[in-house]
Length: 204
Image (tube, rainbow, N blue to C red; front, side, top):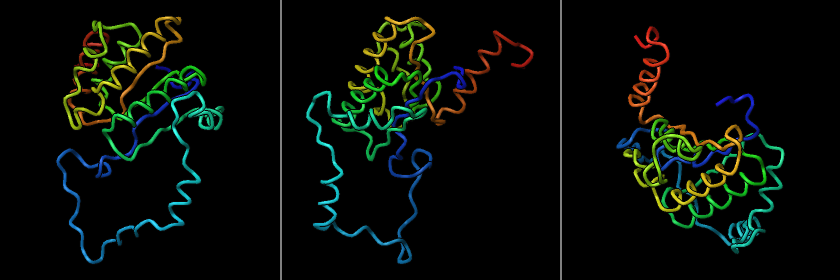
């Protein structure tokens, strides 16, 4: 992927699942009297502020009109999240992502997923590789959290993205790329395998 030529990027799922950049299985520090105090319970004014800022989801094309308008000139659009794992969140993230692809000219979607299994998905959505279904293409996600990407909502999004791509020239197809590094050794092995075919001296 030539980053310099990309029109706009969509980056999904940047929030942590409860531990910053810690590795799977790492424990958070024990709390102590010197730790920061817990957030106070919501008050009436807090609830009013949330209600004023919230945008209802009605299932119509108007749901994300303000986001589409606000990102019209953006080169990178980041969609964060406060939780990994709700059907409703994954469904709405897919809806918004599809609108951004169709209306904003997104050319690359980067996800909080390991590089090598996500590259298999990338090949599938662009009409390459050996997989014949999105479910097959999602088959290499085996690390924590296993269900974050191989779930029904993301699978269906990948199928729709592939259908969108197949109606477009190869050079204009949207790619899907992983940004996470839990699979550091597998990713290194993939790079070496590619080098053995293209530059054996560098592979050695």
